Amino acid sequence: MEKLLKDIGDIISGKSPGALNSTIRAAVIILIALIVAKIFSSLFNRLEKRRRNANLKFGYVRVIKYILIAITYATAIAAIISGSAKQAVSAVLASSGIVAIVISIACQEPIGNLASGVIIILASPFKVGDVVRHMGLNVLGTVEEITLRHTVVRTFENKHLFIPNSDMNRAAIENANHSESRVRMQLEFMITYESDIEVATKVITNAILRHPLFDDAQAELDRAIGKNPVEVCLNRFEPSGMVLSVWVWVEHNSLVVRMRSDILSEVHKHFKYAKIRFAYPHIEFVEKDSKK
Image (tube, rainbow, N blue to C red; front, top):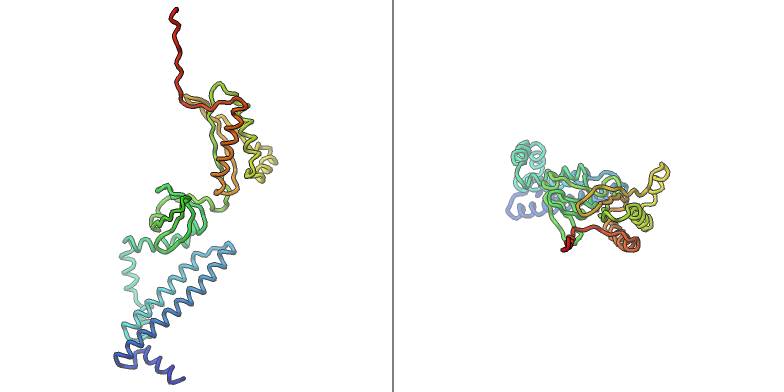
C-alpha cells in the first residue's frame, strides 16, 4: 500500500519518467481535480440551500464556490503542463499575469457577463422565484435560474428567456417580490357625464370589498387610522366621459390578473342594474328641423 501511494505521488510530482507515466499522471490529476471540484460543489450547495431556507444572503457562497472550483481546475491544468503539482500551485498562486490579463479583457462581452453575474449574485437585486419585469425589454416573468453568464426568466406564456447578465445588470429591473410580495393595483372606470358618480362609487367599492382576495389585513389597518380602505376618486375628465380611479391592495403579484378580471366583471354587471353607463367614443347625429 505504501509503495502504491509512493508510486502515485511520484507520478503526480513528475519524478517518474516515461510517456505512459505522463499519461497516467495526467489522468490521475484530472480525476483528483474532478473529485475536489465535486466536493466543493456539494459542500457549498448545501450551505447555499441552508442560508436560502433561513432567508439569509447566500450570493457570496456561490461566488466562493466558483472561485475554488476555478482554482482547482487551473491548478490541475498547470500541473499537467508543468509536470509538477508543487510548481503548479506556486505558479497559480503567485502569478500576477493572469490577473492582468483578466483585467485587460474585462470589457469584452463574455467576461463582462461573468463580472455582471458575480455582481448580481452578491448584490441579490433578485433571486430565483422572484417575479421581475425587465423594463427595457418589457418582459415580465419568474426568475428560474441565475448563472455566471445569463439569467433565465420564464414568462407567463411559459417561454424561457436567456438574458445576458450584463443586460440584466445594466437595465432597470422591477422586482415584485423584493422586501414584500404585496402590490397595489390601479383600476380605472370611465363613465358618461350623465351617470351618477356616487352610485358608481358605491358599486365599485362594494365589488372590491366583497372580493375574496381583497387584503383584509390592510383594510383593518386603514380603518384603525381612520382611513377608508377603498377610496374611489374622480381622476380626470375625458371628451367621452369621467374617469374614476381606485387603488387596491393585493396579497401577491400572481393574484393581480385574476382579481382585476373578477372586479371588472362584477362592476360591469352591477353598472347595468344601477343604470351607470360606460363612456366610449361615439357620434350623435341631430336631425335639423326643416320647418325652422
